[in-house]
Length: 35
Image 1 (spheres, rainbow, N blue to C red):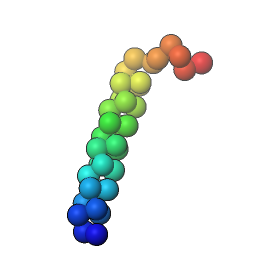
Image 2 (spheres, one colour):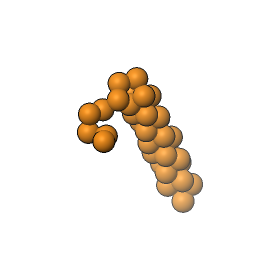
Image 3 (tube, one colour):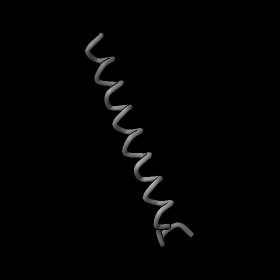
């Protein structure tokens, strides 16, 4: 159970990192497909 929790936490951190990077890129160059 402990290993599963670590995997979940790692994937959550990775997802947050990717999502944060995506937001920064979107702010730097606004995508055409939004509106």
